[in-house]
Image 1 (cartoon, rainbow, N blue to C red):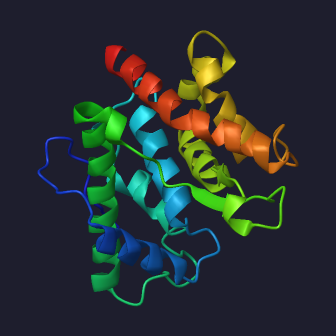
Image 2: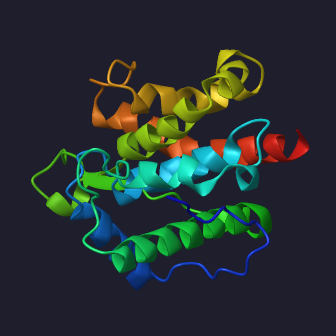
Image 3: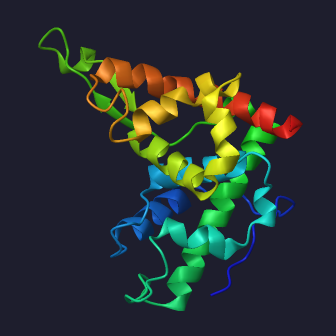
Length: 209
């Protein structure tokens, strides 16, 4: 099946909050076990945009879009109830992808990844004083799915130089056997909050390469 390619020059407008929630809902009800949730999708798209040495606009849509919903179902039935539903998901994904690229290029400091937040344990009985912790595990796992599509391109970035420390929080959070797999909320929060600045730094490096 053919899918549209990403066009960085498109005038796709960013998703509204309602549309983002709609995409989240559409992904959450898909029957495929491999479908990404909205956090993993956000990380996956970020990873696709940052892949070294290969503009995403050169990659056919069918090479990366079906990953979002866990594949097109062969030999199992496709996860969508209709072509209309598939088209809607494709267009929402492409628009969200465009919004990330636009934010990184035009107003990077305003960009925020989609992470989970949870209340930690309060030192008192007052729940309002409980600290809020960020947990980017799903986001990082989605990012690493994009890495797996081009492992040889990513290997030098993970192995050393100025890029390896920037990618370290993602590797630590997004793998089952990573150093933060069994870490407490505070350590996971610290790694998660390092990701936004790391992504912007990687984007700047990517633009120069």
